[in-house]
Image (cartoon, helix red, strand yellow):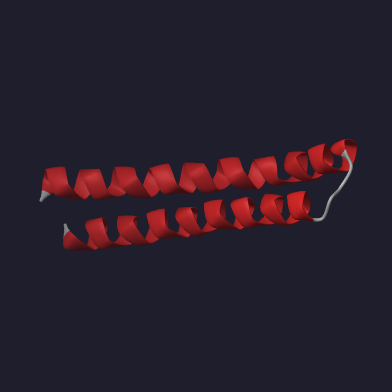
Length: 71
């Protein structure tokens, strides 16, 4: 079950990297001094990536927990 734990940790880390990417992208848009509508548009573009990264991270954590229970 070690393989399930470590692969889950890798998947979770990939999701975490996606979340950091979303944070940096929105932070860059905020520092650019965009108008309210342009900033809202940028956040709407990032939202699906954010939700997908969160989902991947949760799947990775579930794999880790499953590996611990079965191991």
